[in-house]
Image (tube, rainbow, N blue to C red):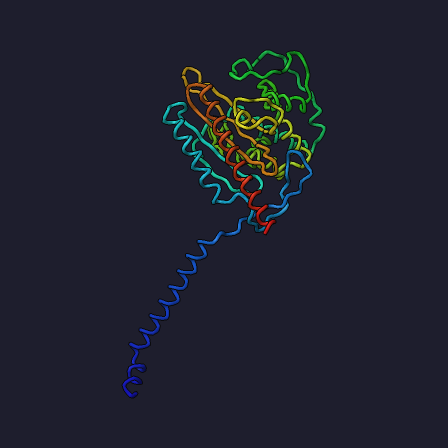
Length: 346
């Protein structure tokens, strides 16, 4: 007994006991973290206002479970990555960049999303937003009329021809020019609006949207940078509800089956903007399409930017990616509905 007391009173004994105790705590912490990591963590869901056709204003976020989470998005991303790799290996395109975002609950991913492209006609969307932002404080602006004299026709260089264009010698209201610029991708309408706009104000709006100013930073941007335009319209977080809804309605008017719209079933609404550029003196071409696909109860944002030597191959690539994305979203939604039905039957 005396020997035991001597051992217990020895400092080395307490050091050993403390070390064993600490090791036990660390083991418990590690096991707890492993088990916690194995559990399905709750994901944020969003509460939205509803009642509109094109916008869905965000009200607040809270915890939720029954959404497209990381477990579903990762295999989806790998599928798109494999498709893009195949396109590049077959040299049907020299660059392909993709950005996807679920607009209801937020899961997103990018493929080569840091690559930069010339936005071309995609810049018509932030220009529209700049005019509407100004119109919030000066509504009469949209009724002002501008003359198209027809001396410069920038539509003639387009590969994808719009079915409607401005008529020389006619005056148009700014609202009419915005619709022509967006719904028919009319370059002449864009140039009239661009030249009429206060350039400092335009730069401020572009800065707010995270859009680079081509005059100072080069005429390039990434897919993720550009999609901020569609997110602020959908969430009605930059313009008021009326103007956000109107902007997306114009974006939903074009019938452009060569891009995202060509990859979804007939009848599915797509609010989108495409852009094209052919570099003079070279065989380099770029084709992009970005927008919102209004999948029932689960709209999503998709942006695809491409570069290559053949517009047909580039448009085929965008349609292929769009079709794969729609198929995966549809599959995930069907699985969630089945899961919900199973819970109701328990």
